[in-house]
Image (cartoon, rainbow, N blue to C red; front, side, top):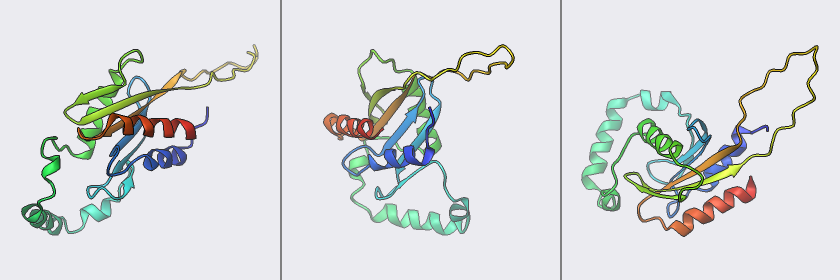
Length: 173
């Protein structure tokens, strides 16, 4: 099966909003990341694993001063105080680890320190294997029978919203 990374990322990014999941992952059952999308810190713009290092690298001191001013004067961050904040790579690693331990026969709903996780298996079609030819050696890639869609929302995100977003992804898959 051929998977378009741009199409998958766009599908995942389309699931994200302020009232629903803030992070969406497509992984293999052992935990290998296929694609991801997350809302940025302001919660308005979905992004992926790639960032522009020049934006973060230039004037790092000015950015930290801005953050200090933003933190001292903001009152609308009180809703997120009950969930620990992790930087992107650490949060991603924890999500991958939790999702890779999930089995298909378990509940798709997981409450954890990162909020609510909703996991949905996506069964893949069996690959068409041509008849073996004795003159040509066959190289067989590892067989992946399914993917797992992981949606991560806050502790206040309704389960019905996460399930609806998973159904939306499956209908477009």
